[in-house]
Image 1 (cartoon, helix red, strand yellow):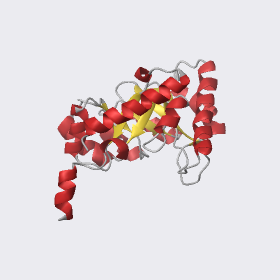
Image 2 (tube, one colour):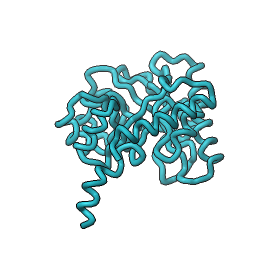
Image 3 (cartoon, one colour):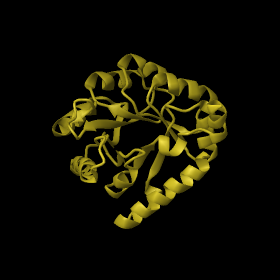
Image 4 (cartoon, helix red, strand yellow):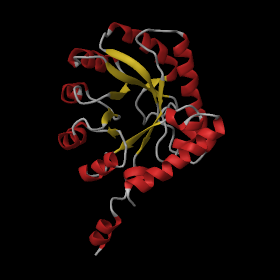
Length: 234
């Protein structure tokens, strides 16, 4: 299925979710996660009107950036090693995985302008997930005030991989509550206006709970051209 057709379907689901909670779909930014697809498929997403692409790995981002340059806004959404910051810092609009001071120091050192960062919060407490524990997030964000090139644009989390909607919803709801608490502190370096949460299997729940950015991979750019798949099966 073409990306444009998938995008229409996703936009419809987002509209329905927004109507449930009296939100505007214009407040939701779709990030196409292109980690597992070709540069051609990523280019198709941009042609379909998607202005935000997300990559989990430095190599994938650099390879696609060489072709697409700054046509979309690039989001680095995976775990970022400090030694790789210098390779991507001038190419990304957002970093979604700030979770330690050593990484903040490297971002601040390498950045020539203010970088919009999301503090990654491990709301679920799962050991398999990266991120700051929710109870330590505020203290961590306060420490980030020392870095003049970092703005805490918002918070990011990943919900548990479960079909239990209550568990997923509670995870997103806790991140929203944390965001509100941080905004009330009125820290100049941390406006925290954005919430990056929700993926292919749970983005509608995330929208209902306050997401402003949803990171969608397989449901949006997965399954490249069925004709190609058919040829590969023969």
